[in-house]
Length: 266
Image (cartoon, rainbow, N blue to C red; front, side, top):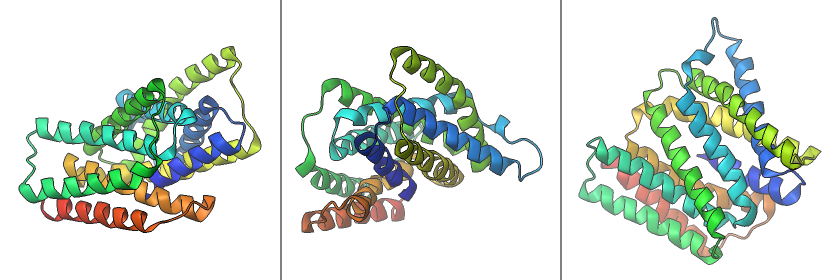
């Protein structure tokens, strides 16, 4: 979850504090992640990239691209609310279709976590452009799908490596489009932030996520991710000087307590 929060911070910093376009940030993020994972794969005998899938790569690319483009004209709080709302609906809906049951205490814990998230983000909510809101919802659905696909992963590192490598096909298509449109803007700071997001927060973070997913139900996996906005707020305070208020502290307690209830009562 710390890696997920880092991605939000690094993406916002790149789009706001550098001249890097969202398309270039997406390309740098996925390409640097694929390179690091391939280097790690060389330390093990045999190839591991074949354990990825085109479905996983497609979901990963759609999430990363939509995430970057949506945040261009949307506040961090509004984007996080839309993103994780879509993730919740996608993963819990999938779990329900697969026969996962929510008990009374789990429902209470989920509502507690959701209420804490709403309170946390409410002060920063402003009506986003309809197009950006739709793109962020697409990003949330894609990330929820990527997480669902990871539940069958035998090796988190192997599958993540394959997914990142296969996603380079989509990255190449994206680069062709942004070059044709003249939107391939980048600078050194944006590149460094993109590499940090791709090689560390994304590649290594997603490998760990795919490692633990088989041990979590879809409901638990979805609920745990509600902690990301809490970590994002802390990161904003540490690195961007954003204030932490009593309301943020109370919201964080509600979110983390709700998550604990859902996990313990499952």
